[in-house]
Amino acid sequence: MSVSCLLRVAVVSGHAKLVKRLIDEGVGINACQKDYRKSLLNITSFEGFTDIVRKLLDNGAATERRDNEVRTSLYCAVCSEHHDTVKLLVECDTVVNA
Image 1 (tube, rainbow, N blue to C red):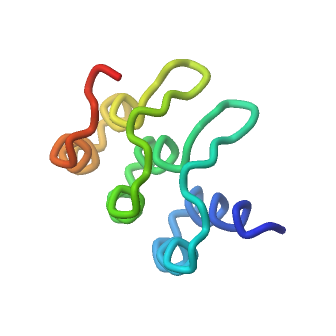
Image 2 (image 1 turned 90 degrees about the vertical axis):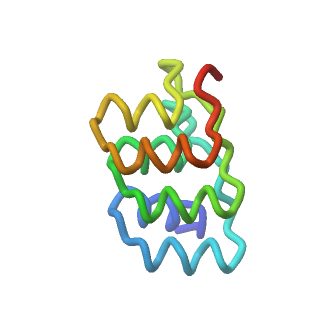
């Protein structure tokens, strides 16, 4: 398994410590799934993993990326009713109308 795949599995599973370690080791954070074009930030925003969202944002995650259904990370957080994640994304100047 590649380190990029390992990072994606850690993100989807909500393993914040492993995500932090992999990011600190320099694993790229802006790659998207080929099939749905979901970024790591889209996934964590949808799941409400606010601590991982913060780590991704602190390391330059692209907030304007859209998935194949034209959803941004902010949209994912709003639709999933993860208020803390929404607040964090807005505070970090996430583009609302990307």
